[in-house]
Image (tube, rainbow, N blue to C red):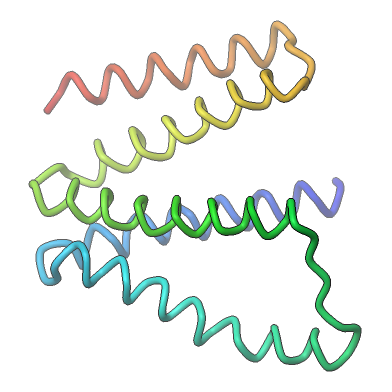
Length: 141
């Protein structure tokens, strides 16, 4: 198994935890404040890693990297806000989580196709099943 797949599996586990933590926090915090605190916590946790890398090998970023990482930050804040709004509206985690995660899978795969990744029957079948699953769950609300 490749290192990249191990990172992807680890990220999926963390994404699942992230979903659960949002669900548990949603009824106890304003969505805007919650989204800001998530980002602030990420900065605090990431700062030692940043300093270590900066001192060790230096930090490099191109214009394109900066542009897309800013868009990523905007997406992260918006995601945190919308997930907190979802759960504070009473959507159970067993429905909201799969819709959010499954929907994000669909978006990533579809955009991957537009970025030139090869379309295969297995990928098409997988994304179809994800979308069907999310639609089934959404119908139970």
